[in-house]
Length: 477
Image (cartoon, rainbow, N blue to C red; front, side, top):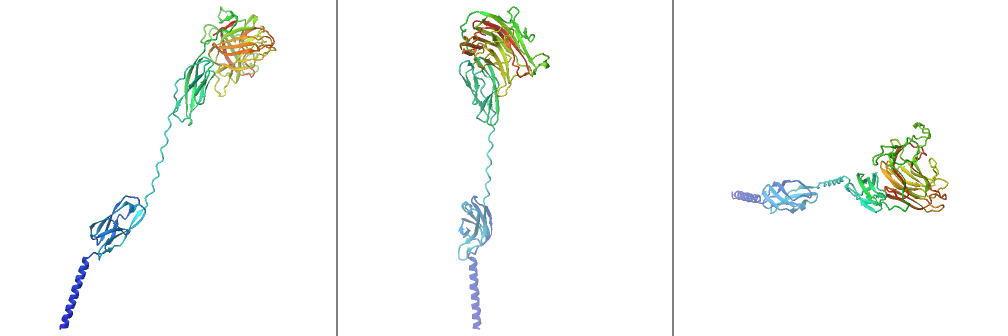
């Protein structure tokens, strides 16, 4: 009986102590269990973040660990923790092992979950630079050019703005004063040789193909007429083609050469009109004429002849009629001097004064005439070679043209030939051999004369002459 009682007592004691041990163990920390983390991923290079960890068996001693390193942890309750993840931990792409550690005899480290650190998205390419602003329109900013003086150096500059520099300058339509040129850099330079008012268009081209144009007017003051060259005094002949004036001795090819009471504006009263026409063939049949002769002139004979004289007249070249030829070279004789008093005065040991038109190298329409002197063509020919482009004239304008001629001594180059246009001396030839060894005088004087017909170009134009004077002293305009 005693043994049975003793066994029962021992069993009770063992049960009692086991119960106490289990209760004590239950009261100790338990190993934490990790169920989820939030967020479960992030992007590399982001800011610091707060990691929320849910699970069980969390105590006040539980700490969230990042790849085994403890994070600053806040215990929310037994099933939730929050930890601060610094930005340096998520700077690079990869993965982090998240665990929870609870200290103590009955604690430990939880299972792990993975927080994925995704690569940062590729940076968007920078936006393309804005297109360059469109240049301002190209504009010539110079509004006017200064006046100049004939015989004096001239220097002016044209300016432009906008567009795409640098600018290239050139002359367009119109006429620059003889002696001036527009340079590619916009400089207008030279020494004008003739007075008057000249209009022209300047053009500026930029590097992008823009073109700007502007019209200018340039006034050139002519110098005062030179003092009369030494010569005898007295007017030998003068006519304005009025009824009371002395008549020319000969008028060739009337009615195409005739006095008119309706000359172009600019002169009063009558003038001598010369109409030149050919049709462009060798027989002129298309015009209804019997020959190709286009001589138109009026002459005066002075006897005895002169070895030193002045001859001046006002001449007007009307623009050729539509269809007529104005270039490539078209010669028009202006004045003619001879020692032959027969009709036409074909022998001319004295010089000719010729007016040429031509097409410029730039192909612009002809708007200018070139005054030219040339050697004569008789047996007494002197040694003057052609002197081109001593003055330029416009269409549809009255000009005073005056010659001074002093014949050379026989066989000696001591002759003189001077030419004035509107009182401006445009050529001063001295030491000339005008008549070779003939030693004759000049007795036949004419205005007008032929138009070059060597190529049978189509010609239809008018010339007018007024106030013709032959004198032994300078006449002037």
